[in-house]
Image 1 (spheres, rainbow, N blue to C red):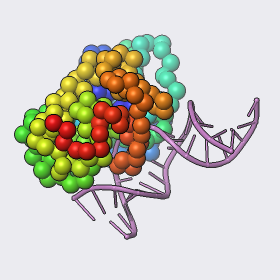
Image 2: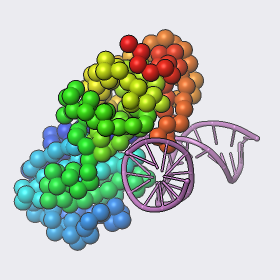
Image 3: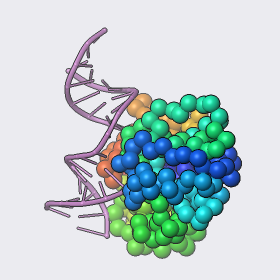
Image 4: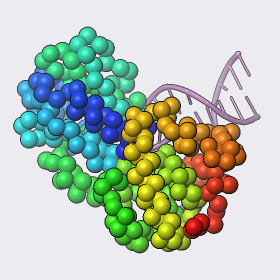
Length: 266
DNA sequence: AGGACGCCCTGTTCGC
DNA sequence: TGCGAACAGGGCGTCC
């Protein structure tokens, strides 16, 4: 679930609803998710302070506190972020709960415990330490082409590599390649400049449209492949049956008719 | 360097 | 129907 558009929705949720309320307690139900601190450490960091801003880089959400400290939330494969009004029960699999003095709270949920919480000195410091590439929405066509020029191997694998481009995972790489008409196993080096430009434009439009749809497949444009990504699904463009292959260790869904194996369809 | 793999964890879906 | 196997949208380490 949580790729760039999902995390952007969580960022906005935090920004719109959870700022400027005094943090009373922090309940960490799964301390193994704490990367660089302890229950006590996170509690000390947050207690008495307020979230004052929310930033995002790729799939990482950074919650800034009025003290200048930061809390990084990564959602793994099955995480989310919920804001709870006073009296609302924390959802199942809530692994970390920030309870505010006004009795509202912010819940970090991670069903499969594959997420991560850290306390970097700044988003920049975290991005540098983890060697993350630029955020996908911050990459212009030149930066995109420069990244491609350094990369060998399959295009899907490159799009999903957080060190090259931060924010794209299995689902959105499929969507971007579908919109661009490029086969997921096509080699990056085989893409013409024109095709690469199209992939870049599709990266932006797909991510922006997904954010507009609140990252909910049911709200996405009819032209999107995402809601069809399953066995028996039909291509929204040619109505043919979509197919899957293994690429970059994951299942890639694509339309064999609209995304031919031959690269550089201009 | 990049790809294939196993692993982390846990719930759902698939196939016999 | 019932069961275990395979799989799910992330990321890391290891080996080739």
